[in-house]
Length: 463
Ligand code: GLY
Ligand code: MN
Image 1: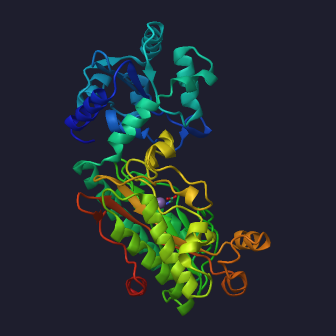
Image 2: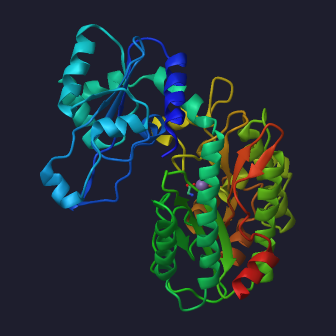
């Protein structure tokens, strides 16, 4: 945990910004996978972690915005628990670690909330993303599950997004630690990518690295020879010489700050000329994107600038045609990159996505596009110092998408469908992803850059 002043400060800021009523932050419970006591790896709710820091199940925090009082609800462990789990801290001790004065047994939470409700006080909660939390909240307030939605507070969401979007020095230090774990994972993936290896052999080693240096993976590993499938979690293919392997993975530190990087490299260690041609376009895209990152610029405009780099490169190769500027305006490049350039990152790999993507990535000024491709951009708004984000362009040859667009003549004035289908089927996909901090003057890479140029990658794979 951070020192207790960090959590006290964060709660004070919340109290300063939000007026009236009380804030309820429900911590997560254990989740079972095949019988009650066989549980998934426990993951605390990130907003609970942010304000209350405690990485244990069955807790709830209340911040009373009127009196300023803060409460931790939770039960002390019984001797029956301690026999199985070993000695455990008392709730009072846990509360002291995060500077919270008041503690109550968990079964008092329902009374507390019902009293507040009966007095007509505002109860602010965040959107629910687990079924058990919806049931818990409806039980606590004795309301129907459908009514739980009425308590979701846009004021609370906006305030928390404002606070969590700006990372402080302690958070940046944690993110750099996560990046160091991610670095080890990616270099290991490059070194292991030899013909004959099964993808899952690499994926398993990478997960082991994440766990041995931190808390866990920051999301299930994406590792595939079929990198054109954007979130490919199937790891059963045997690596073949001449194919590309896309690895998109990252770790969480013990405090749950994330890393998220992608590298794509040739099985066996040598890029073919055809692979180099596409790779260089994506590399130019990521480098150009990074060069534009600074406060005041919208990430939507950077996404479009990177799209232009990709469209120009694809036009030079004869895969696209016409004026690249027109192609990007019409969204034609999105057949090759149907996703957004990046997202916020922090305590969640897609930071705060459970609070609502548009609250996190958009605002009154920058609205989310509905255009294919651009609508997938999770972060579009103006950058501010302290934002941490990913920059992750890619070029993919997705057979079903190409065939559909060709059949429907979508953007046919900008795409050479025959060349795409005849010469690039089976090529796969290339994505490159770095994590960056927006600074006062520009940007800073989080951690050391994972080998990325053709030369660096080939050198790493050789050693
Ligand atoms: N790295 C996976 C994603 O950003 O969706
Ligand atoms: Mn990402």
